[in-house]
Length: 119
Image (cartoon, rainbow, N blue to C red; front, side, top):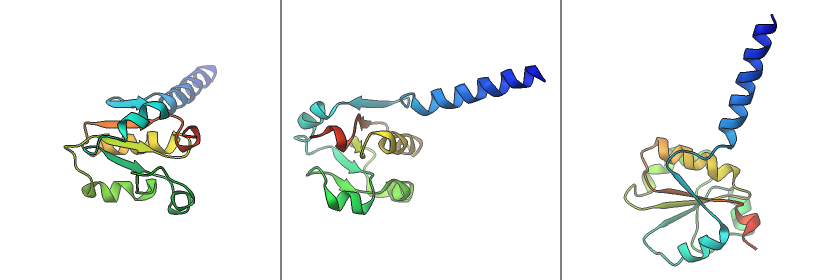
């Protein structure tokens, strides 16, 4: 029985570590670095917050595709261009980055800290 407790504990730790580890193939940048990236018109800028959050405030240049709709709307994005993803704090954009990588995107960048770190 004690053996099962060790296995359960190890699985919980593994789950937690995987949730917070950066996704393989995803670049992470700061909001300071984002200011330079925004000048590049060849890149795609996606805000994965809800429509209400986006309407309340968004960074000019970003297009809104809420996280829950992203997997259905990846066809609206070019796989040839880099995709820079942002949310409120960086958690949803990290999930969005995983979705994009699994969908075949090879140039994906996550903005650490999200819109909250922008100001």
